[in-house]
Amino acid sequence: MAETTQPGTGAKPTADPFNRQESLTADTFLRGLWQENPVFVMLLGMCPTLAVTNSAINALGMGLATTFVLLGSGALVSLLRHLIPKQVRIASYIVIIATFVTVVDYAIHAISLELYASLGAFIQLIVVNCIILGRAEAYASKQRLLPTLVNGLGMGLGFTLALLSLGSVREILGSGSLFGYPLFGEDFQPWLVMVLPPGGFFVLGAWLLLFAWLKQRRERRPLASAGATSHG
Amino acid sequence: MSGTLPVQTSTPAPATPAPATPGLAMLMTLGLIAAISGLLVATAYEYTAPIIAEKERIATEAAVLRILPGAVAKRDFLIAAQGGLTPLAANGDGGGASDAAEGSIVYAGYDAQGQLQGLAFTGVGTGYAGPVKVLFAYDPERQLIVRSKVLKSNETPGFGDKLDKDPAFLKNLEALDTRLDATGQTLANPIVTVKNGTKTQPWQIDAITGATLSSRAMGKAANQAAQRAAPAIQRSLALLAQPPRERP
Image (tube, helix red, strand yellow):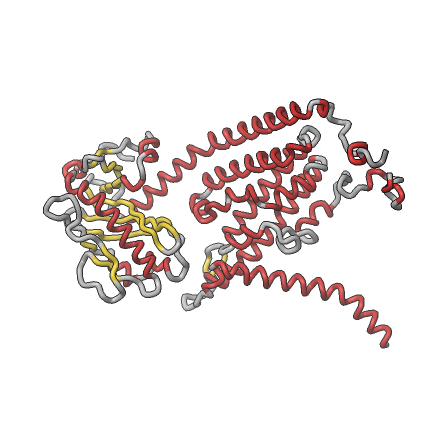
């Protein structure tokens, strides 16, 4: 009971940050899009981020497939959270995630052979995407169904958005088109390295640089204004 | 008392009565999850399998009809072990085409009058980044490969994908010699890829500068496909000349 000496925890046993029941707010959804964006902030799921973002349509397909798996596995984990013993939770989550990945694999194959061929093995590899297991472990296994779905949707769309920002930049620069529609004239010389693997690193680096710069600027602004007033 | 079981006093779920037999609870939970998983996967498979098969059939047919101008109908033949061709079951029975290895199928295209317009078969060669799968159009009378279309490749964009775009390279495949030797078992001259600018014979493919490995893959694919299909086709010309019975 040594912990009770810490301020706050003794009075409210539910204040443990890892066991809180979250109430549904706009933040539940928005967190995944911006504050905790899986790619740009948490740097998770780098394998599909770098591998399949050579065109906007691939990025969109991959993002939506991951969102579907996030929603499906999150819902099932959340519904079964009182049933799953701690000892077998990883095994359970992996089976649940693998199930939804198989379903989405069949679905994409049935929707578009072309997309299926270009995404290749990366659809099956969603099984080991750490965003999904991370969400199951850190969120879905502790929260009610509705917040889990909302949070999963936010995370999934955040991931999709990040993939799209990489995919569209790489497609515009590397193929001179967007979603397959040519943007420039015939004499456009594509910047080929952008659709090759190094281009993934370049564009990801550029985006991270941009976000880091924005963040730094926002943090510096109150400081700067304070300095301005003192000078004035 | 704080040192004995500090974690378990606070966290065990009052909602689960199971912890008395954790082994059984684990088994039952995993069993339940496996059952749910099986149900979902089986449902998805049952629902999508016919759609996927149909889309793949349409895609193959479109590719074959595109590479054989003038053809409006196609029939599939299997290269039999004895070296001839046997007709494959028509479209209704999708199992026939998918069971047979795709490389052993010869597609025959017919025009509206039932005249044979040409033949098509696939070949695979290993390139710079894995297998390159190509569909070839074959003229049985002149014994030439007359067109090619890359179906699947991971070759480097800008280099390897010239296989399907570079006009000078495609010229190689407009009249690629695939005559059989005297025995009728193999090609008189195996198809080979030669260094750029050194093509002298009609069975050679002039490589693309900077994409030598991809060009070689095309040569290997053409050679492998023609070695396999051309003798069987030449032996079964009478069978191929028969017009397709029913319109697809």
